[in-house]
Length: 138
Image (cartoon, rainbow, N blue to C red; front, side, top):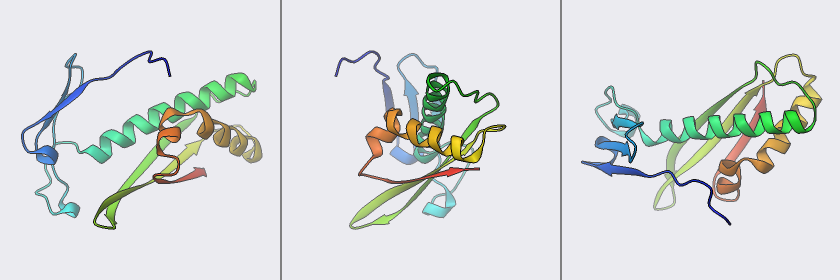
């Protein structure tokens, strides 16, 4: 694969309760462990939220690409990524649900667009076979 872009981020401090920053400092956040995972909570973000934001944005771009390719207007569309974490074997695992809204598009057409976007989205390709991903057209 020819790499077109490389994102670079560094975690410092206490991992999930530490700090993350990209090399260009565009993303610069304190992290907090959610109370559901035994942490204190707080105003910081967490790895699951960051993953959800990245997946939602990436999948939305893939949906728009497929819409243009198939000449279907997906204006006003949105993608919400729900990322869950829980015990899996000796460690932890993730599950993802992508909730896709495509207003003014027939449900069957929207489902085909979403399925095609799932084939081209880099996050979907990276998670395929590793994380259970559920697609839901709302």
